[in-house]
Length: 221
Ligand code: ADP
Ligand code: MG
Image 1 (cartoon, rainbow, N blue to C red):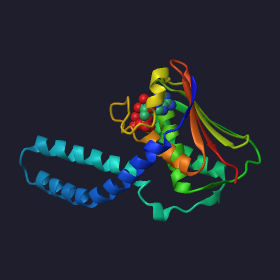
Image 2 (cartoon, rainbow, N blue to C red):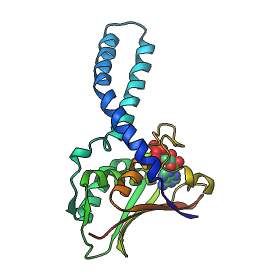
Image 3 (cartoon, rainbow, N blue to C red):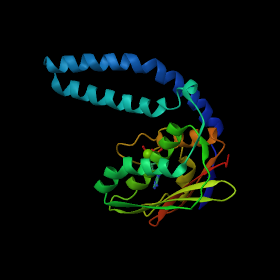
Image 4 (cartoon, rainbow, N blue to C red):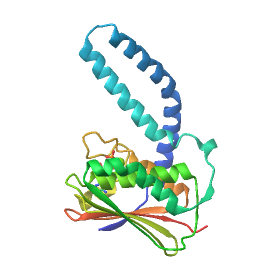
């Protein structure tokens, strides 16, 4: 089941909303968290406070996943080499991979051109896709990260995980769509948004019980 995932209209609305919400909520959230921590050390109903704190942590986490989209003024596109960028992401995901008994295999075509990108945003996308690939394999396996040049530059993340049922493909990238116990359902939404801002697209090819391949296509500058 190969399907192009296009949700840019929905996403631009969500993105604008996210920018506003993130900005408004972050500071009071931090101070509220401080008060909860203070109360917690001075007694009271401990279990309530623990719940409050963990809820606040979760909200903060959600906001931080949105925050990447909330700073349009900080967006600077530069030519970046793709190989060191991916190597950095793979290093970041290493402990996550080891804990899940997952091996990451890379395959980069030689003489790849640079991409024109906001480096931190592109890193966030690659990290989201790599984390999803790792999380799709609770019993371990291999993730293949490859880069090739076609009309565009194609960065591919292939796992041997649980796969995605065909009728769920359309849900990918919907805000808060998650099948994970502690997932946010924001990673793909943010990723689609970022890649569409870069003039690219993300496609997915998946088979239940066999695995999933996400491909990011970015224009050659
Ligand atoms: P989260 O990872 O927090 O759940 P995402 O937006 O990153 O949120 O992913 C949304 C959902 O898409 C996941 O919960 C999972 O069901 C599905 N998904 C994403 N990537 C994969 C993958 N590589 N293999 C299987 N399912 C995936
Ligand atoms: Mg994710």
